[in-house]
Image (tube, rainbow, N blue to C red):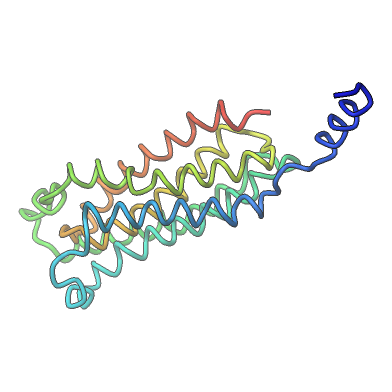
Length: 212
């Protein structure tokens, strides 16, 4: 290759813009959701008599709360992903799912005899929840981090944590379709703990991979 041709090729490469966050989201997020869906179908599947179980308000509650977390954390992540935005303040987006969980727990404690509290909190499948909820969230988390990496967030670690919360909300909503433990006490302990694991992973990966 001639020197002039080499210089022209290097200039052309430098002039090629990186993929925009919207383009990254357009192919990464569907792949992440597909990975979560395939894992759900292959490993877990719907709980027996799922459709009839929806008549129980607690089942709808444990699906709705994670979706609320995913939506509100996505608003927070959208703000954090902009380099000109400070990392604080917008954490207020997360108040809604927090209030919902606390309200569900208080209502359960008011309606259920005290001797039932521990049994409902421990449930039948807490270990299954702790393992599978983060695994369901893994595909969406990778996709979100890949998208945010193109946006140069001001605080990479906090942006990674927010991505982890979005992914955990998605994973928890999927896991709720399988989970036989319907008590808000179970959700408040094991879903929240699994969400913390996922958010911590997002924070750890984001601190290194999203830095610029």
